[in-house]
Image (cartoon, rainbow, N blue to C red; front, side, top):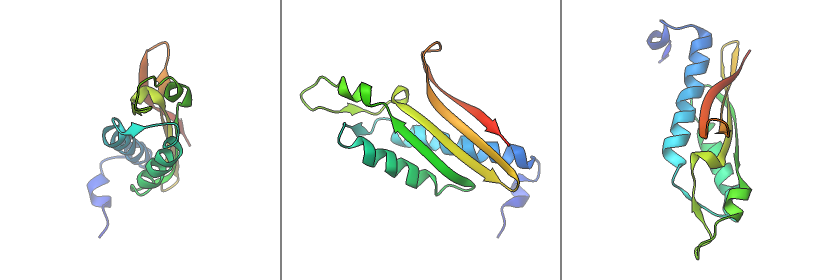
Length: 121
């Protein structure tokens, strides 16, 4: 069964942006708060990438966790809870002929991990 009837009121461009944005929201609300350390960061990045690539229309996901912030973890447990300001993420969504890159990373001047549309082709 096709889902196209549910999206007939938007353009292919809007659909590609929608799919990328939904995936970015899923990332933020599913993974922020996850315990992470220097040792576990690579496997967590990979797990996030692999799970989010399963979402509809998502062709690739790139996740980078800020290692400098992890190095500053000065507690007896040597880990932190993953936070939005530690993430640099690119989600590429493709729907029909439209390709969109949705990005989230910490913007120093805003002091906020901003999600935005970086590219539309």
